[in-house]
Length: 278
Image (spheres, rainbow, N blue to C red):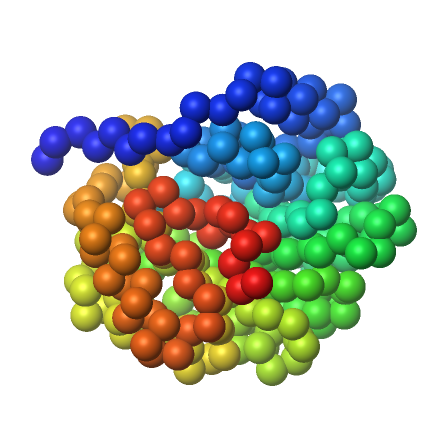
């Protein structure tokens, strides 16, 4: 298989420097950096970032993810304020907040998510916030805490097809993710989104079956992107799909009943999040 070299737009260095300086000043993490996202330079130029709370060490070890794995760090109670200050400094209108998995915490980090939302809203009630959450091990009180927060959209990534789920993300569960999304769809009045990676070894029929599973539980917004192996130790890429294939899947997703779809080689779960579903 030939090496894959996707092209991204070269950013203006001033935007990169301002974003990185702000993150450093407020001691914040972004999934953009931790997961080595190929779009991070372009997103920084648009003054957009997906903030990663609850530390930069995940208690799970997914085969596709470049985030560090280990014992969760002590929850930083001041993080919510620093996050709100940074967002205000950057004058962002749309914010995505995600986190590492924190299976070491009684509520899996849900209360900290809510605290971050509250701190941001205190500074700007008009800002739109999207939460991209872990599965919280389908702990209902934690899910209810997330639903009760003042957010615009909820997301949880399905990531891959049923057959591959256990090998790709061994500490997660395909059905549990569906139950989380279904619970969100039933109890949250806003939008529900999920995301799929292609190239892990799935068949096209399995992909379509997973898309239908997501529709069946109430997901209406979907992103589809090409998996790119972060390092040699991660799950290998089994297949590279063409831009034409991603466009075909986008049209199929719309015909199946999704209301908003982003599908492309470099699309990630939070890529142009502020545009999806407008």
